[in-house]
Picture 1 (cartoon, one colour):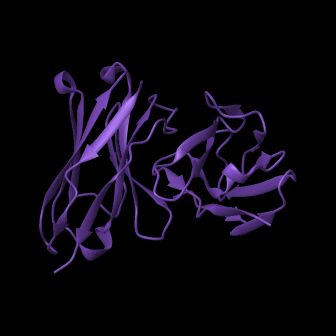
Picture 2: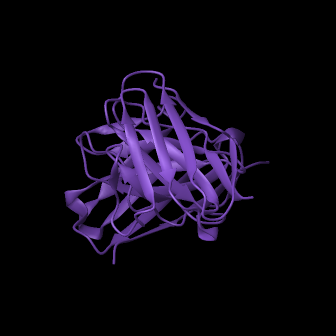
Picture 3: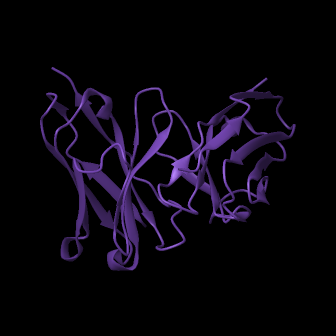
Length: 107
Length: 117
């Protein structure tokens, strides 16, 4: 099983500042990596797939990068509505696995 | 508009059975793979099962859960047998494109399963 590790667990960022979230895979997943945003009481929302492709309707301030085992989600200018938990997921191999999540909050 | 609507969650005793349903609309159901992902209270996301070019299961549910789909009615199912307390979670259905492209978009709003005596 490919283990996905996210860091930090919690990230406090001032409005308008950059937020950088990390995701590490225990094995090479090439670019088979997706990012999701989940707000309280809601189902997750796809942000990024194939490591760096933004999903339809996702604001340009969200960007993804990385390959093999190291991945990053960047929010270039944090808005209040970006407060949420963010998860990475690999789909390179079965079983599909998620990281433990990073909670982003406003400082 | 693409929509996924789960139903069937409830309180069930350990060892019991439950069948979840997910009604899909707004897209050609047969063009996509479908999955179940769960989230225990206050915890992260855990993939459960996918029906695509075959059926795939997490080790934690293999032999107890069965995924299926009814294409004419655009409905995804999850038959859950021998339920355990650790199966307590919100269960989401989600769509993916297919082999090699199993990212999930969109997700439903979820249905809550509580396994307790």
